[in-house]
Image (cartoon, rainbow, N blue to C red):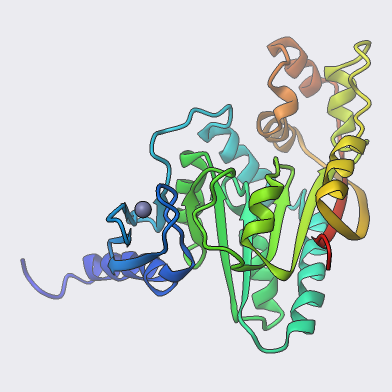
Length: 306
Ligand SMILES: [Zn+2]
């Protein structure tokens, strides 16, 4: 091989950078098989005391699952969510989360901040939050995102290179105890036992749940006459309250003008569409919806007994 092929050198350098974040942070990981601590063997894998070894993929993620799990989230859905995220539909909600994290950071002084996104999908929420923090000169921050969907994590790892991405089970997080200052959990299921375990004692859990008007323009068309168009987040909030002490709940509600193309991506990304016929989706597209409502409750809390 000849030296000085700049293109391939750059690619290899890029791969090294993406893998190095695992090498440098190997101590945060816990083996999901035997629960022992792990260390980096080299740039290509991390290994536990019992020899369970996990490869670091070239794009910069680790798959901690023993077998592939089929989910209802597939690549096309994630692509649509990424497109929708790019148009800014979630931005007011994400800014509220960043503000909560910023006030937490200010109270911690000069320490490095560890943020876990549990159920990160294709990574755009965590990616945007980390860049918002960077824009505010918060550079000592490490983001980690986990999702059970390999498609989502691959997409995330290709876009955001300085975040630690893992395919992992929410019920068996591949992290040692008390690693994170902040856990975020956006429109995604929770596992409070694992959240309690991996969160530091003074850490905060920020959970986002939909408000009753979230995407109501779609809900009205999809569920008319079925009584399902009214969504209540009461039970989810109650479950949070049973497991964590609530410090603050913010309601963030707004609406955004959308074009037909964006609307089709919103329909494609939301689980609301799963049980909906093709005809109903078409109807939503031709009805001429021009605004979409964002409505979220953002709950901040700490471990119980503090
Ligand atoms: Zn092990």
